[in-house]
Length: 70
Image 1 (cartoon, rainbow, N blue to C red):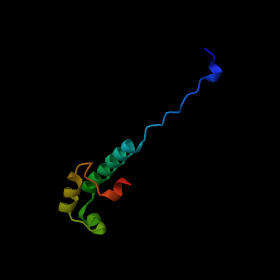
Image 2 (cartoon, rainbow, N blue to C red):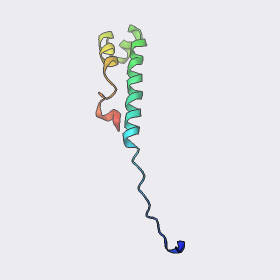
Image 3 (cartoon, helix red, strand yellow):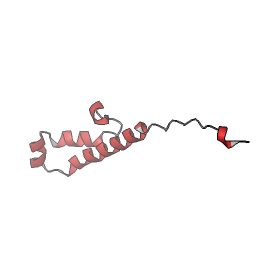
Image 4 (tube, one colour):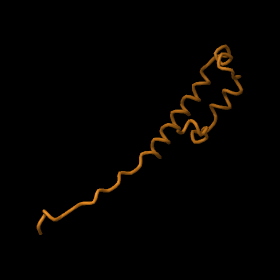
């Protein structure tokens, strides 16, 4: 076999987007959970109540607004 005539067709690399999206969603979930650490004064500063912070923190990581996943 003459190796000078062997050509390899390059394989396309797998797209990292699904993994990247998953990691981004997990990070957003972690940042949502941090809302539970804020006291009432800080929550007022960002314009949400304790109940809204609790509701947001309980959302699953895949339940993210579309603009978070870009």
